[in-house]
Structure formats: structure tokens, C-alpha cells
Image (tube, rainbow, N blue to C red; front, side):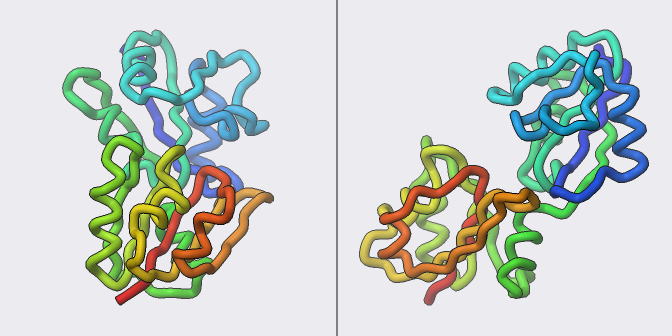
Length: 200
């Protein structure tokens, strides 16, 4: 089992002292491609690109050394911490959180979010997220490839909603777009993104 596993949330701002210290000690770093390209990743560290979280967690559990897992935003909020702490992996983790993607999206939109529902959209169960978007007046959707803004809008059909689409939060490519749901399907959206769906 890894000697130490630190999960670091990244929101585009400079790493905290605690995160930087964990990164400097890392002999294995796991994350998305944009995380692994960060200059703070030690050149000698083994790198694992996150695809299947279960496969990555198994590899981390087998690692002899110090592991860091990078995740966007707050990794405890619909994030990797749940998978890493699952009993089958036996990992104990330290977490250095950042601003969640949902909090950042609502901040960019200038809206409060204490009355919002939050759902995760996956291509295998996209209808569940769409059904949540039909009912309340404010929903934040954490999207994934194949289950993004266009797919949400298509499944909403004639149900009118306003979409606030926040692409690549915390990066130089960050963009916020506000459109009605009938116009969303006409665009190609970049991952990762968060969609705020407003209606009712």
C-alpha cells in the first residue's frame, strides 16, 4: 500500500504550501492530462492518467512510495475521495481541497447557490440528470464526455430552460456562455464544463 496518499484539489490558482509540499514528495502522481502537465509535478514521479478511477486506485494501492492524486475543484464533492476510500482499495487519504467547480460556476454567474440541486451527468444514466433539471428552478450539472450541455438540452426537448455553461473553469480557456436550451445543441462544448440550468 502507498505510504501516503494526498488528494489535491486544483482550481487554477497556485498550489497551497501543503499541496506543494505533498507534490514535492510524490513518487507517483495521478490526474487528468492537464494536471499531469503542471510544472509542479516532479519529473521523476510515475504518472497515471486518470480514466477509470477504480483502476487508478488499485495501482495507487500497490505503489510503494508517496502518491498524489490531482482533481479539479474540491475532490470530496462528487469527486475522487469516495472511490479512493472505498473498502476494496483500503486507502487512507489526506485531502487538500480547492474551490469546487460548482461554487466556481455560480461565482462566475454571480448567483447564490444555497437553493440549487447538484447532479452528476454520465452517458449511462443521463436521464436521471435530465429529470432533475425538469423539476427544480436551479440545478448545477457536473457533466462528462457524452453527457454534456448539448445532450442535456436534447433530452429536455420542449422543456424551456436557461443554460449557463462554464467551460474549463480556472484555466486560460475559461469561458461562460448563457443560452436558452433550444440554442445549446447548436454548439460544440469543451470538457470539462459545469452547466447551471435555470427554469420554472
